[in-house]
Length: 102
Image (spheres, rainbow, N blue to C red):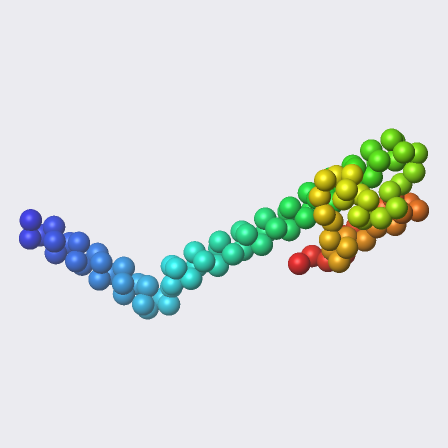
């Protein structure tokens, strides 16, 4: 029993020393990876919105024989709000693009 406690204590000290010597901060690394994953998810969501908007523009044109007049009209047709600072739309050609990558 005393031997098991000694082994556990030794392992704990060893892990602490490895973290201390290498400067490894598991909490910080975990937080960074979560933040990176969250930001990546936001970018993907905006890219999916862009693809949905392109499809909606084509559907709108098929139903109305013309392209939507604005991003707002596309958003109303889709049932979402499209950020005019994020997307650029040309109503003459029906082309929509993403202006910036966060």
